[in-house]
Length: 179
Image 1 (cartoon, one colour):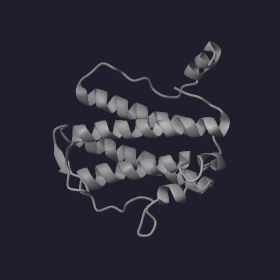
Image 2: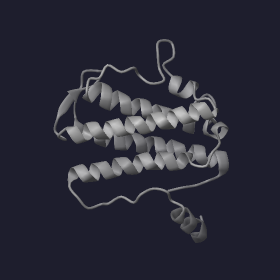
Image 3: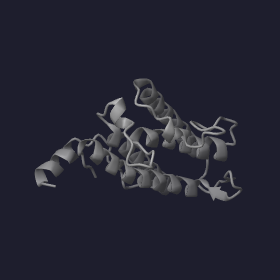
């Protein structure tokens, strides 16, 4: 990548820079926000059809599927596990355990729903994090005990891993590279 391309990429970066100074709660929140904004940036300026473009067979992964997946993950961990809320699992059901991927249709309605749902789940997650001490514990669906701190670190990792997928998907769609 040329220096001009790199400078343009940085100038066009819609993400809010991480404030790397502060206590542990602040830093965890900053890095989680950064990862969330990065996924949104990878999806920016694409049509519904492009967002629903699959990687390579047999995989059903797409950028839209990633947005739906992360909405499901946010809800599952924070609302269902930490808070114990009795809310439906997003995009999945009996006989359709890959719905977040398989049902990611290239329509404006599907795109609008996915992005609005993920935003709402991220806000709910942030409220839950704010209400709990980082050392508070809960059990996941498999009976494992977690701390809120461990979960936030896991979510940063989960986003980072999927952003690697998003990098490759975006490059395949329109050649756009990113940090």
